[in-house]
Image 1 (spheres, helix red, strand yellow):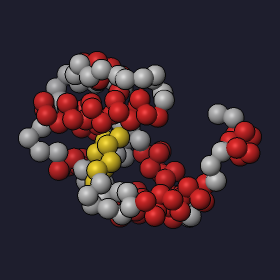
Image 2 (cartoon, rainbow, N blue to C red):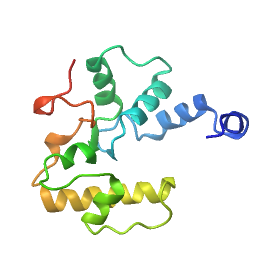
Image 3 (spheres, rainbow, N blue to C red):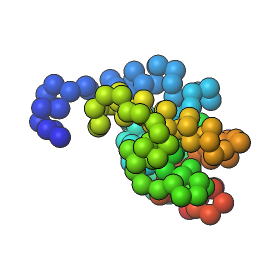
Length: 148
């Protein structure tokens, strides 16, 4: 990433946070966030939204996640409950026969692939996904509950 160019021509971080807050997509139980191994991404978004450092504890972090992103599903976490599924998003999509539209590592293409892969995973492996909400891969503990 060209940080100098981003600083000069990129989106102002504070303005982005303001727009995100006013958009209605955070703090909204009706919006379902679908991700793939994105704990760092949510950490960054929380810093943007709160204008503060991240909490010192995992419990504090997940209190903020639950508040700002009440319905978040991490496909990488959900894969652990599907026999034989492993690997990254592209490999999972291939295994589930989900076709990518566009170029890899482009926001629109990756977002569409993530959404379509989640739907296929949900439809083929789960009766309900509710109990998998709020858990981020790599930050989960036994029983699916997030805590210190």
